[in-house]
Image (tube, rainbow, N blue to C red; front, side, top):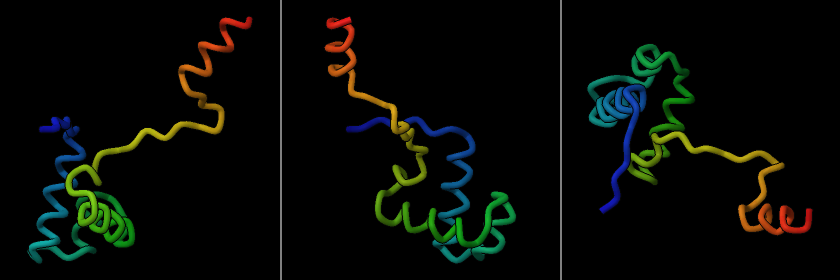
Length: 79
């Protein structure tokens, strides 16, 4: 079993997106509640559809200067 911690903001998003999916809210209403555009709501709905609640979780993206730890260790040995 995988444990995942969601922030309060992510939990709010998940609840509102479930209401949209259950047709209790429109995409425009959900966008107003979450302060997002209806296009962003559609993107989030697609992420949740494909990845479940993992689609809501913010992913940390490394920059173009992000190297693997073993590569950094090799460089430090040389230096």
